Image 1: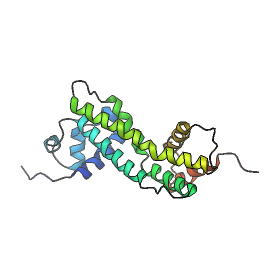
Image 2 (image 1 turned 180 degrees about the vertical axis):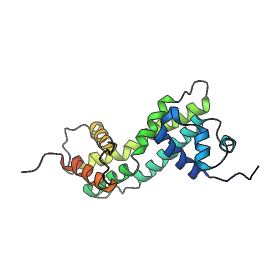
Image 3 (image 1 turned 90 degrees about the vertical axis):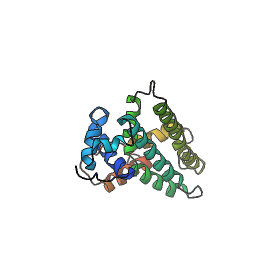
Image 4 (image 1 turned 135 degrees about the vertical axis):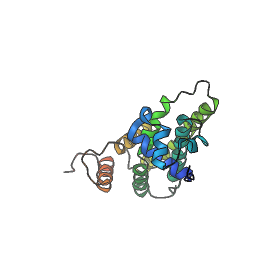
Length: 191
């Protein structure tokens, strides 16, 4: 038999992310992932006992990257620049919500390692919102956001607006531009 092609976790996670988005949890298999990477299933099983462990590690890595990106926004930046940068970053990581959605499908009963990973993911999810709450509060303090609007609702609205599927086939840059415009200015034309 020929020599096994080498792969790294970056290749593994990029391919796994692509497949999980295309196929969903039920359709995702280690066999498909191995074919995508041009390796044997055994090569992947050397690192992961099952798809659940692999998918939780993928989610943890995606969450870590997102947290790092969101936390890199300077606190002293003016609000309008900060929200523009934040919206770009949320758009960059818009698949995170979709990927995290499969977390509830993973059975952690009698699997302490998986349960530990899920708990860690939950803690990271709470951390994700901290910079967003600070940004919303800054917008309120600076007079850009109505003080009566609940922070949780605003943050949810922003995330959901960016995760709307692009069925129009419009270029991603245009989708982001129009989404930012609707989030920041609403849909009512100023007269």
